[in-house]
Image (cartoon, rainbow, N blue to C red; front, top):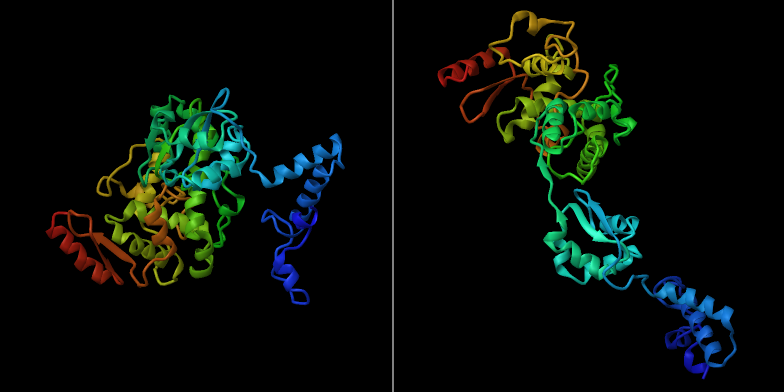
Length: 398
């Protein structure tokens, strides 16, 4: 009888004696080797009547090693689970396990892999129950009535101040709560290394730039910290997938990721079309870092407008700005101060981030919108720029 249970080797093992077996897995969940031996020994002892109650406990534990832990039924008390943007099946499984919905992450993953509809699960908040089987948890998440819809869309290029107002209108959380939470970006999840600069200037630890524009599901009873943290998490996820920080450090000549994020925000504010985002980013790099632009400053009116909004003043068009406002060197976002401004001036989207990470090559230092579709003309010299401005005037743009 014991021979029939195959204690420790199989037919292939018998025929391969003397051969190298380095590639064979020993033990583990595959059920081969050591695990198979233990299982066979215990089963043999059971059949021979050679074990008592204590050994049955040990056998039960070993059996659980081979069987996916899972609950039976549709669950007990109600619980809400938040599935973040960009979550994979494994991330969903962890969220469900942490909330006590499933007995193991594997129970949910196996159920999802067996059901092609699992790819339809959307980010958001779900009303589920604790102690559900993996299959029942999946079924519940695929049922639209269990998804709590409380979405808000944050457009690209909005300032943090503007975003706080949008969020407050949607959630009834006071603007002052968002302002208070935003004072500590690191507490919201922004890693400290993001605030490093290589241009000799001290980084301003601002939440600006890290509130990724997208559509978000607001969890029930959310706080300002939870909502802003959700947006920061999404920023980190998107930039991580893009390898934004790594590529900037390798390809942008020593410019820090934070400075590139600032450039992305400038491009988001200045470019009139998607195709011009990278070119505007290149202009910003050329003006500040190339050493070939006379003042080594940005000379962009959008930075002045950002300061006006930041200080509670009314924003203006370029034509409405006074000379004092344009040239005020006491303003840290002045268009005439040398170097890059202290922080991003809005929250850029993925296209602007890509434009700052990998801008097209060019010596452009000037640009101007030349048609009502927002297309810009770019120039290396001021003389070329004057010609482009004349085209813009003819088109009634300036």
